Image (cartoon, rainbow, N blue to C red; front, top):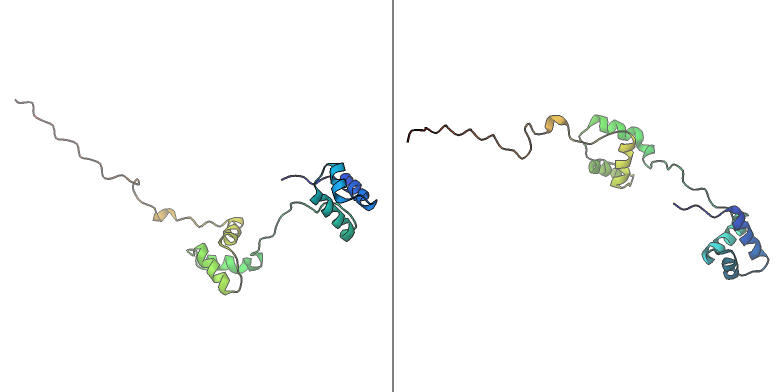
Length: 140
């Protein structure tokens, strides 16, 4: 992700705008886009500073409000699929995507993989071993 322009540059551009210079002229003078000059001028008028907004940070999971119910539900019925959990949430009035449900359980350390007891006993794609041929007699 790119970094925002420096506050020093933003303030010089806004100062040029306040002294009567047009947005296009200020953009050409400072080597930035006209759209940036317009946005910085708007930020100065509305917020009182052309400084950039905070970038990054951690986003809270949308399902944290339903955390206790979700964990209890999976403990009660561990073979539920993510689609089934999504449908139950929809019935509770919580509209979320499949990926939001998946991200929540991944964050909680829950896995929906098949149990080892349900896997095949032998090697996949292999039949029984062929019997050895009978020894041929050497009498001829």
